[in-house]
Amino acid sequence: MEKLVIQGGIKLFGEVEVSGAKNSALPILCASLLTSDRVRIRNLPHLQDVTTMLTLLGHIGVDVELDEKMGVILSGANLDRLQAPYDLVRTMRASVLVLGPLVARFGKAQVSLPGGCAIGQRPVDQHIKGLEAMGASVQIDQGYLSVSAKRLVGAEIVFDLVTVTGTENLMLAATLADGETVLRNAAMEPEVIDLANCLISMGAKISGAGSETIKIEGVPFLTGFDHSVMFDRIEAGTYMTAVAATGGELLLKGLDVNSISALVSKLTNSGAEVKSEGEDLLLRAQHRLNPIDIKTAPYPGFPTDMQAQLMALNTVADGTSTVSETIFENRFMHVQELKRLGAQIEIEGNIAVIQGVPGLTGAEVMATDLRASAGLVIGGLIASGETSVGRIYHLDRGYERIEEKFGRLGAKIRRVSN
Ligand code: UD1
Image (tube, rainbow, N blue to C red):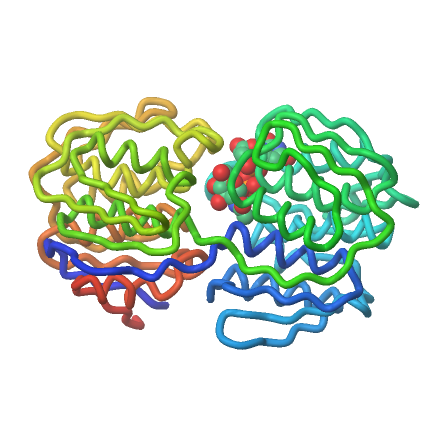
């Protein structure tokens, strides 16, 4: 198994090239299931989750051709296995995103139930409720969700809570349904907008993506597309937080700064200087930062996917801060590991109280989930001495060449095999 070994305590300077967004790439890859035409997807990040999704599409019968760097050409003309098996769904819950498009186009699909997940229960009841409202019948058979419908019919669906992939799955499904679907209390994440734009380029009739209410007028068929995936705002935010925490200067290019405004305002409150011009962003941090209180919430609130990284920053801030996690019930697994670096954190229910200390010291720590791992890497970059972060297969699911990108900023970080 591989680990990252970090010699911390170094200020970081330079530019990072931000990759395409994992959370946008996954649903857009599934959009290829809606058409028999060839589709081209550009700016795909090289990540384990993308490979898993391509494997799943290949299993279903999609013809996958690697394009130029960071691109694929897919053809869903001859799909013969309308099923997502347990082995793939187990490693990546977003596999459930094949359900909506397959049922919409072929009238049936089977997806293994996701099972437990390290960061909470993460059920798919909202996906099922929506498909049922569109006339599908849903059965659970030998651990699989079996969904069938002659043709989905438009419906008004009110989500009980805001779900990103739930919104995306039903939006994908509704594009080929008979009549109008209205999704209320929909997720407003930029990745939902990116998917909607891709679907619109296929001929889908969608309005309101990015707001709480999305309307989709079903069409009889969709055509191919050529779409470039939006930038990864969580990756960008992770590098921003790391440089804010270690001190230094970071340049990022090609961002829509509006989509990271919740993070920018927190980092600015902490004392980092953030300037943006067009699609460029410059972050500078010189002094010990102020503690910042965070409460995670659906977009445009503070993203849960940035919670662990900000907590790492708070461990060395000048005072006490609180981090409230409201989206996932078990997303504080990085806390015990950050404490191994000398952080002072107490958990009270879904709130972590962090007493900033002047510095952290290196230790061996273990990654537990994707974003927790990013928090530990930031902890290691802050800490004096050597930190090794184990189980980095979690990181490889969502961060492209993280050691290379940090290395270019001057960090001493290397990947080693045990
Ligand atoms: C997506 C992101 C993930 C991010 C999360 C929250 C992708 C591929 N992943 O995950 O990186 O952390 O949004 O921003 O885009 N829930 C239910 N029933 C459902 C669906 C969700 O109760 O049917 C609950 C979940 O358990 C969780 C909350 O709703 O507590 C939000 O989950 P959701 O937005 O669905 O997360 P994902 O789409 O899986």
